[in-house]
Image 1 (cartoon, rainbow, N blue to C red):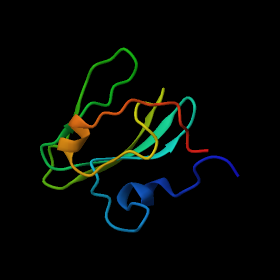
Image 2 (cartoon, rainbow, N blue to C red):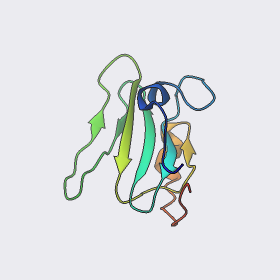
Image 3 (cartoon, rainbow, N blue to C red):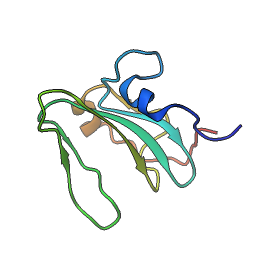
Image 4 (cartoon, helix red, strand yellow):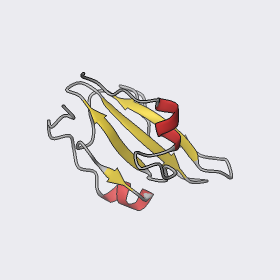
Length: 102
């Protein structure tokens, strides 16, 4: 069977080994034209979720971590990328190299 078949709500809150998803960014599935990421933002952290042609940022203004999933098209990160902290996400931007999940 092809594709990413998981309960997206559960994997957004938990990562694959059932710990709380605390990674700033985790690439969970990469296809030729799209990529699924899990994102966790601590209070006051921000990330740029940018649709084609539009510049904006998502800022967590809550007192709790913000958990979300994001679909990138085209893929932006190397398959399997895990950035446990925001500082790593900022400095370890490895561009998509064409390698997909399947």
